[in-house]
Length: 172
Image (cartoon, rainbow, N blue to C red; front, side, top):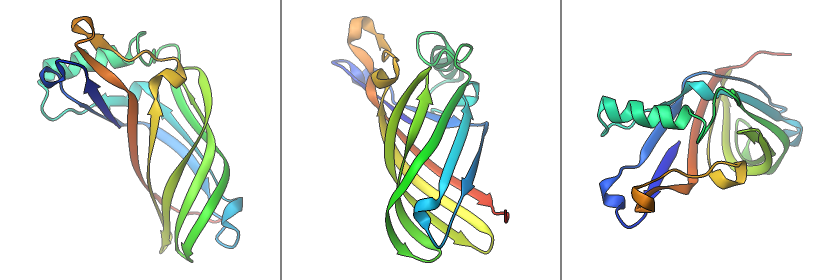
């Protein structure tokens, strides 16, 4: 996940890179009727980790504590981030490699919102590979973006979430 800064003194701040360390889910792929496919993903909010390569260990810890704390994720109160698909459309590609649009509900910070995003999906030799990107506004989920210096540096409301998933497949 990429978290960007804005504001008059944004050059004195830095963008943030955040990764998820603990997640689980289930993907059901119906190769003959892709619209019948589904996905459910759970991410431990406490596992979201600040990975800023240009930040000092002290700065990373401060950012991590703020992100996990009550003012942003409130991971103690809202321990999971959950996405459940409600539909698959925009089906293009060929057998084994598809470009899809996945629609569903994202529950973050105690708030549920309908979202959709493009997804590239491939199946090869019993392996599933999926990648996609979506953008979310923190305020849509009841999170107020962090401001410092009286708002001269602040975190942008919009987040970019990029993901790559690799998994082995099993037959039902």
